[in-house]
Image 1 (cartoon, rainbow, N blue to C red):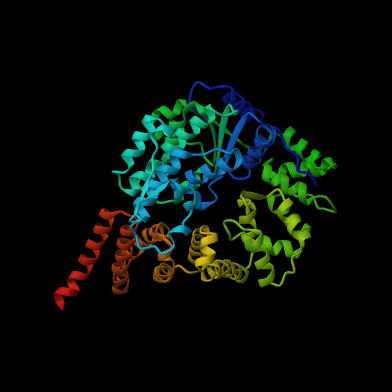
Image 2: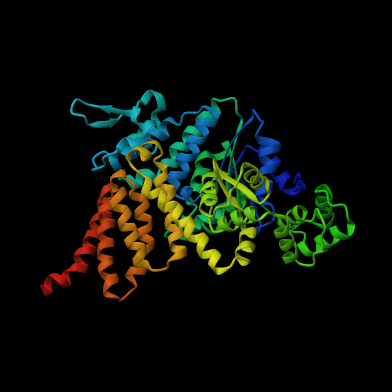
Length: 521
């Protein structure tokens, strides 16, 4: 069946107004609680205005992909995707990244430098002298004097300071590319911005500061569309944002729109439509689930639970099993479906997979990454038995653990991002099945030994810092001994990242913790 779309006329009007406006910063915040159709509205905008347009450049990030929460990864991802889609070249960004790469990795003990992400983009920017030393070639004539001077200034900064400035070079390149291309406008779509709060930051305003900086540096040359559960409160960070952001709340449908949706979805009975209207609360998610479910014999629903129960009766056991498994995952892939089919002996075929991806509650986050709507996840977890839940969590942890165990030099060389993905998700599922901090520490220790020489340092820094308070706040002697090891690991990681001050700080903590032992000896 086809899933109808009901116009969001006010939000659509805001979008068209901002497309025509080119004299100021342009930020459109689409917000509303789960199930109100934010993702569906974004799909509508892309289909109607962007996909076939020769006028607009557009690029999107869904922050359900946790690997894009760090500004550096997000900026480089945006650059690569724009280069691939529009044949652009972010020259000054890659030169800035080359300086960061040299500062962070050039004099470090990595064995597999050529396997690092984006190495192919930056190796041609290095000059190699007779002794084999690499320096970054910054050609003044290619970039203009101001950009040349800014890049030269980066050489005096530490690696973190360079990383914090990458967005400036991305913005400068983009402005120049738009000016010299056939495209007249650029649209950035950032979905689920509220999820950025999951990443550790010193202040509430720090979590999405890089997005504000990006907007400020690009200026009128781009429109930013950001979705969130609550309205963005950037005015609390800087009052000037209050006049910049246009916000529109997506809420439940009115009665006429809800009934029109059900009619267009193929439901003919007025009695059934009225019952669905009342039981769904006219919320788009529940209307779509009802439209999907009430297409055969039925009992009139009176609550949302009735709609969900009817939905369960319409799907086969294999599809239901997959949905239950992946309700514990933050995303899933086709490879994970194959692994689940084999592990649980489901015998999944192409027909079932195609049917699964045709459901309106399955969203594509990025290439080959999919997720289930959060409301449906919550309902599926509610009806799952305790034994099923444990079984599904263990399967997902084991899936990523197997990937980590299989990674060797050749596999990482071809797909260096596999460490990022597998470590991030295995760590997440480990915490779901075991809450003991010492287990988490030992697990990290095992994998840092395996992957240290692959320069997977930042991945471990993030996780050690999340684990730090749990060990630090305990009075248990075992915890304290592990705390010294954690400080030592962090010191070594920061040293490898070129962060000499932080490395020294953590080595000092190790000495301080071990001093009582030395004195007693």
